Structures are given as C-alpha cells and as structure tokens.
Image (tube, rainbow, N blue to C red; front, side, top):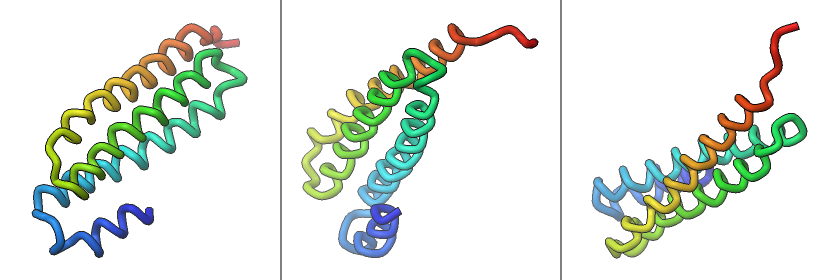
Length: 109
C-alpha cells in the first residue's frame, strides 16, 4: 500500500508518465503475489509443494517488481531485462501450486 501511495503522490511529475505506469505495474504484481504467497504458505499442511510455491512467488515478486522499481528510479534499461526472470519464477510458483493442489485433491465424500 505504501509503495502504491508513494507512486501515486511522490512520483507523479518526477518521472515520465510511461515510467509511472511501469512503477504501478510493479506495485500491482507485488501486491497480488504477496497475497498469493501468503495463501500458498497457509496451504502448506495440505499441499506438499505449497511451501516451495510460496517461495517461488515471493522470490519472483521481489525480482520482478524490484527490477521495475529500479528501472523507474534509475532509468537504466537493463533493469527491465531482469523482470522476465522474476516473471518466470512467479509462473513456476503458480504452476507448482496448481499441480500440488491437483495431486492432493480428494474425491467428494
């Protein structure tokens, strides 16, 4: 929430509009994947792969969003090239969580 407020109020007028959109994308994915990692961690007792999935979601979020924040702060384009590494980690986390949930499913009683 604090990063979103910072972007909306402190960065407006300080960075180019397209960089502000980049920052907002980082905040959005950061928030969504922090919540997803918390959900995955809460499922760790029921789904064997959930802890690893949570770790992948958190690491991916840190790399993806962090690289976008660094891009906005420095305007150094190489940071944008790092974002797909984080995105790949987030995708792997989602897939691992889905696979674990499918594997642990139980037939209806």
